[in-house]
Length: 155
Length: 93
Image 1 (tube, chains in turn purple, red):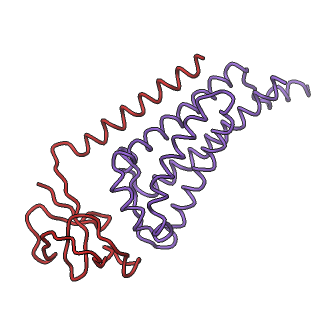
Image 2 (cartoon, chains in turn orange, red):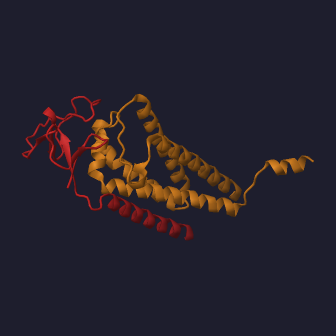
Image 3 (tube, rainbow over the protein chains, first blue to last red):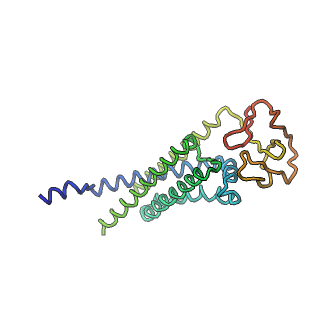
């Protein structure tokens, strides 16, 4: 009886399924970060102007304008290799949290919001943008959990 | 190795989508960016200076270096000129 209840409660995935889901998550973040980084580089001038108008970033706009696409590319590279994938997932998780916190702060402080998110993402409204980011934070968290789980199973 | 190849393929797709979508946005559109300076004038080129008040939208920037470009009053803008949501003057022609 107890065993059957436990079986029902424990939703288990095979190692192969976990690995496939993890690959989908990492490639999703590679797609997202490379896409947005390239968009920012293409429209670099506008991106820098937009950042310079932000109350929080303002004077550091030049550094931040280079730093954001650079960090996105670095995280994408980390996600590509099996040995650095975990670090890449942590980086994705942290970057999405930082970016979402910045958005929430800017909306709540009533500051003028400026976005140069690049391409399709730029067409999103701020609330939609936050929901998308929260979904991506959850996905990145799920990726970290899967990676840890697979690593523990291998040991 | 297979995973790395998939990642590289994803990267190529991401770059392609980014190039295409950004090009699509600017398709058939020649955009020139103008920046507001003091007295409601708009000029081309990045103004050298800082916002007089960061809370202002559009931010009023004082030119520290004479840009040597033709300016126009916001009250009498040329055809195709508008201010976008970021407060940046845009000329489309």
